[in-house]
Image (cartoon, rainbow, N blue to C red; front, side):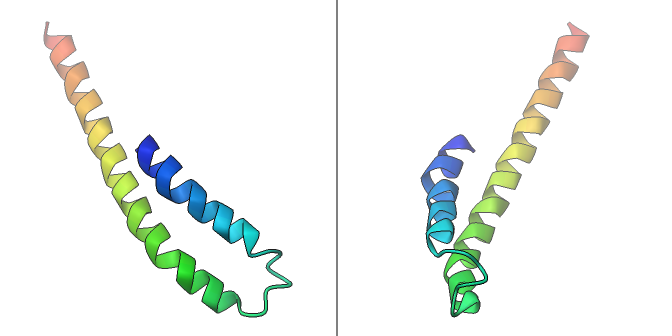
Amino acid sequence: MLVITFAINVPLNNELEAAGDVHRIADVAAVRERFETTWVRWNIIRAVLNTGALGCLSWALVLRGRA
């Protein structure tokens, strides 16, 4: 999850910030289109990985409670 954040989401955030103030961008839709698909795809992957990690932690706690 952290690798995805640092390798993909942070650079995307930097690109978005480099586009400038939203009130001064000539074509906000183009900036969003270039950004959104990749951002959403990788956020879904991060969410699935985090959910899996929570499931693993929960299962480990169940097993620890049985011991």
